[in-house]
Image (cartoon, one colour):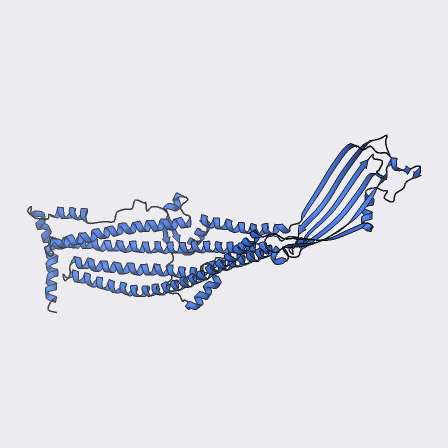
Length: 561
């Protein structure tokens, strides 16, 4: 209370002395700091925010996080490459099923020959003319059990001037069917469908890799989004800090002019303003870098209008998220993480490869069954109607259709059963392949264990970061409020002459640091939330992103399955 009269007296002196000092300094040529020089010095030395070399006159682009993710997924070239890889894996499945596709073939041939055939029965005509026409059909393929099948239909028409030929023209048709079943090497569904299962599993792996690519791009978008958000808030803080410092320069000039403060007070104020001017320049550069980085990720660099547009962020971010327990999060990651699924599927493929290698080491024992029917028809050759005046006749007389009548009547069947056994002597190649397959499987199992540990650590670290950043938000928010209160108190002290501009600038810098720390904590918290969701494999689900799967390739015909 005793200091109140002194304070009131100090205010009265300040109000009266300011215009008086201005008049005296304008009239006194010997004054150390004339008013014109002070004004000029203030205009030239007081720092102001300089315009960026990049124009701010571009269009505005309001952007929320969901729209940013949509743009990134639509315009990212790396995602297109991953999509092509996934489509190629679908084609690999179709290719693996191709070995069960039946093969149909048609063969036709015509032969005309003249050959000498001297013989005792026809010494007057040693030259024989023969004409042959063939039209053959074949259907062959393999079943998923390893069975190989074939169906052949041969048709031949022949003419001959030979005296030994009874029918000319002669028609011959043969229908032949054959089945070959491996009993050791190549036997069973597991062996013959092994490559198909591997291709299908590889397709699932490609889908999970595509999932990873999408998730990584989304995480990159989120991190870039919040980095820009922090950069913009930091720029506003630095500009506010510069404004405070500029105001202090103006106040210090007046106080020095009326001899209330020493000249060093003005120097300190100008030095503080200069440092804050530098901070504004740095903050503007950080905004430009963060904005360009986000535009690059979103694919907004392809035309000048988008490149020069100013991004206006809409989302405010999350400040509170409920997390499950660490054990629940780890189990969730094991169920949902695509890279965990890739490791599991890779081990399954290597297990199938080792079984195929074991089967290839077996000897080969094939059982074959074949049978068929033959039809024969034609006209009796003119020179073969009789032998020693005995008329000849044949039951095979008739046109081409007569051959199929005989086949349908099944009058001339034949069949055959055979077995083939073969074994590689030494089999070093198959033994080496089996050894490599077993080692690859063991290596995949060890890598799977290592990857499981890495996932466990990633989830725990991500959860710890979320909890830490949540605490940072609370503590920095309190620190910001206290720093603002201290700054307000220091400015009131300065206004009544109980503090200096240096003290105000020092407290303002602390308040600015507290504001930046709070904004940094918010950005880090939102980034850590996204990283946690990425670590447990739920990032796509959070933003309602569903990857459309390709349909299964067309299966082979029923008789080839």
